[in-house]
Image 1: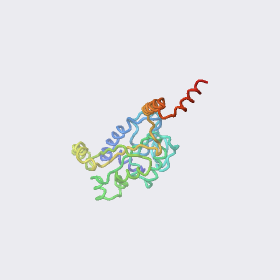
Image 2: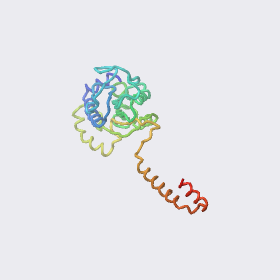
Image 3: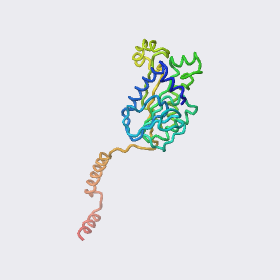
Image 4: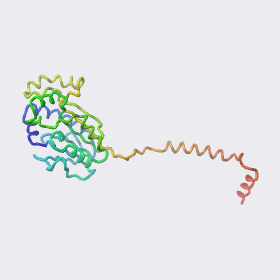
Length: 254
């Protein structure tokens, strides 16, 4: 992830508008995720794990004040070792989005959770990107559609479970203009959620081949009842020949 995008988030009025909404989103999405190990990849300017109670937390990026410096396409964690992985806009600012998702799939434990955000090209943010070009941040990002990300997740063991949309105001550069469009936040979520500037996706790693084991006592009770009927029928030897019955009685006396 490029440092310039993090600087844009923290250093511009539009960036701070977006930072505030994404911070709130990650706090909600990660609040009820439990486990032992949680990692945030990218954007050290944002604390995506602040609302989570997992005891061991780690922040990694290729710049800034983080616990580990690394590339998102090559995470320094063991396979199936993480319960929660937060990736704010990582796919927007990488040249290897498929490899980043493969790494996420690799390091997550079964039933581990991935939370990511990305710019929505089918929005006013996408329109501004088309008009002014892609020479500056954040407009030089990839801007993948949510549908495409879901398709990529489906190819792995990551099953999309929930989605969110945020930042409905037009991407104005001035804070007072953004404040005037505050009514669009509530109205947009209700009437045109797919037009939001940013989407969030929560995905759960499902282990292929695993089968949920449920209690079997009801089935056992049913089988016992069936055996009782059979045993009851066997006590009536109406189908046996008399000599066979006599031999059985004789053998039981010895």
